[in-house]
Image (cartoon, rainbow, N blue to C red; front, side, top):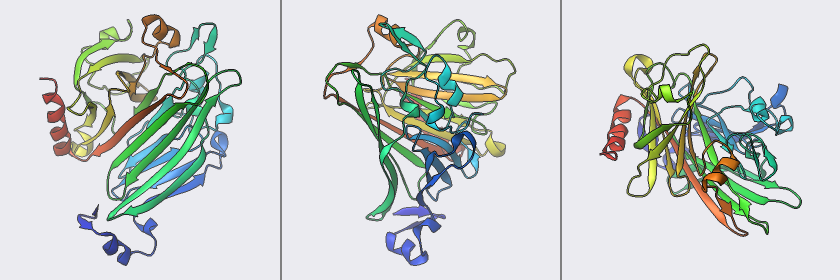
Length: 362
């Protein structure tokens, strides 16, 4: 059954009322026409619940803008969804085309800070975020009385005499729901052992992020990344109004899981719309993504928090290798990663999920 407009509907009931299903929701592909984003293909999703979001097919199938009933959930940078032709690979050049968006993929062979690993110079956050998808399929179909819409495609990170990794991504949602699902399958299609780092840069912004917004997480321990973050440890879970001259802070969380091995975190703005409340949750499987970073950046003009499940830390591939935590894919190996992002519409939904999370810490 599909829940729309305050009631449940069967497939037949909905189709009796509309000419095209696009009247109530669906997915369509368009292309940006202006400026630095010209030529980027976009899959535009509308679930009918008030949730809309874009998948940037030529930017690693990142999720870009995302809104719920007109209120932005994602942070969008000054750059916008730039065409991958403008990518700057070395050093911090990644930031020149960092669009923000709800999900920016980092990997597949490196993620985190620029580094020099075994003589190889590696830029910030790797290449995935700038790889165009091929084999794209964006569509929708009824599955009984549930209507599912999706976008699917494949990115490849490869070089002659080096790595040959593919990532097949499928992003989907259901008509009448306020949830987004993402499934990645990374495969080593080459014939050499290859370093493998994956980080999901999940970026939230105003008005979800505002003074008083709270991070609710099943954290067993929280550790500041460096001396800059250390003074903010006690207040890491509460967000301030924008601050001029603020320096970013990053915190590592050691998370507890539920009985099925999943971690769920909530970002909650209980003061949204005079106390009605708005929140989101992020759910992921810890076995494949054992690390979690919180990026707190409450600077004026760059007002964002990133919740970042990963299989690595963010200090560079050389540091992960030194620590003995760098992961590898052998020839033929594959990894599957699953994310779920959902809207919490109101204080009651926020509190119900927050109580579940807090019970995991006791």
